[in-house]
Image (tube, rainbow, N blue to C red):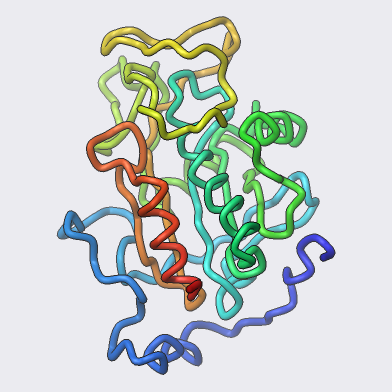
Amino acid sequence: MERRTYLGSLGVAGFAGIAGCLNSLGLGNSNTALPPADDHPSDPSYPSHGDEFPSFSIPDPIAGTTVSLEDFVGERPFLLTYFYTSCPDGVCPALLTRLQWVQEDAAERDYADDIALLAFTFDPKNDTAEALKDHAEGQHLDYEADNFHFLRPETNEEAKQIMEEKFGMPITTADESDDGNESSEDDGHGGNESHDDGGHSGNESHSGNESHSGNESHDDGAHAGHTQIIHSKRITLVNEDGYVERAYPKAVQSEMAVTKEQLLEDVGTVVGVE
């Protein structure tokens, strides 16, 4: 299949004409296939269960095109996470591993055309197209597959604005945090956590297999000159009508980490895989 043949083919005018699609499947007045999670927050700052995902239009530097919400609404669900390649503590590799799980499962169970996988970098200054390609290879992600896109804003300032104003997730640098401007996100991380406990299945891009104690940052020299960014550990699952099915708030390295079994079950339900 030719890569990204679905992009630009939809011409979706908005949600009004399709809001009833899921209702026709016998889901009553619900816009989602999944019920709210047991730990769903009462008033999150970010798009969560049942919310319409905000419109976006962001370049994919590898495909040389722009990826928009409208490319997926009415077409297929998508799974989105947020990362940067010089992440020093294993959180970002763990987030991308979740996308790799789904990409592998989709290929095995023949629903690769029915799900899109998006990885948004908020450090475009360092995350060039070549850096993203190398990172994807280390993560065993097929970045040339029709169902995968890196999203890379033009500048770090633009990336921060999109993260905070559209996706509702504050980010800050370690220097800003030291000055008392730490992110208000309660699921942020800044390099002081241990690696994911078995969640990567050998697919991480960082080297070494040691754990890191609570007060020790991971700095093996590979990230010299890169600013440490404190950010959330979120993965968002959006259905084909543009509504959030899940916003896993602490998807990795926490007691709320989403397991492979749960993630594939949720994606399968939203996609409609038996």
